[in-house]
Image 1 (cartoon, protein in one colour):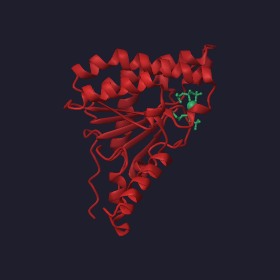
Image 2: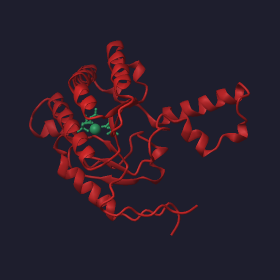
Image 3: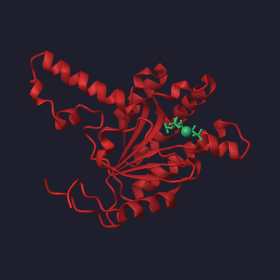
Image 4: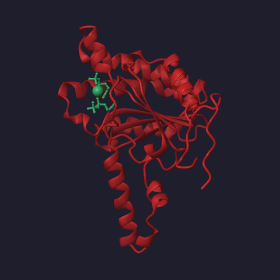
Length: 241
Ligand code: IPE
Ligand code: IPE
Ligand code: MG
């Protein structure tokens, strides 16, 4: 298989994902409650999703709430859900006017019913938008995503529509929630932590990984441009030479 050519610095990655981490520490540094960090985190989402579109990034995937984040205190989970509600309500018109398609990955159907409705309506209203795609991972866990894909394929086999031998990488990839997105090029995690925390484990197989110390509420267009610059200087090999 021919290796894809390394992108020049002028060629932006098609698909960038961000593990938006460090809201709590941002607030702590300022002696503020954690919710204040999450609020500023939402501002960063607005800023960075606009900047990504301006840089020509086709898909921006943001990790907003993991399937493990339910372990946080009830009050914090409630605050996060409130911010999500507010974000969806306040951002939808801009997404529509900018031609952005909104996609949610993760088991979002387990969120509160009014949020599920808001998400479904936002996705339906933007599904035909021709521009960039903003993917938000909500109640997302990569292991659960892979298990669901395996379950789907097992169902096909059990129903006699597919042979077990046909289960290969392409079939599994096609059964993932990200099947309609371009391959993940760059995965950024903010706040200095260097782990994937159950995010896009399959999709990250050949992504470039970038760990930056910036706390998510401080992340802006310049930080993103710097990350894209670093990506442009990486040499991707895909196993070749
Ligand atoms: C990221 O910030 C936001 C979510 C995970 C929802 P954190 O809330 O994890 O912030 P830190 O890691 O405690 O600083
Ligand atoms: C990962 O951040 C999840 C999101 C950014 C939504 P966490 O702060 O939850 O990750 P851990 O617990 O430090 O691994
Ligand atoms: Mg964190």
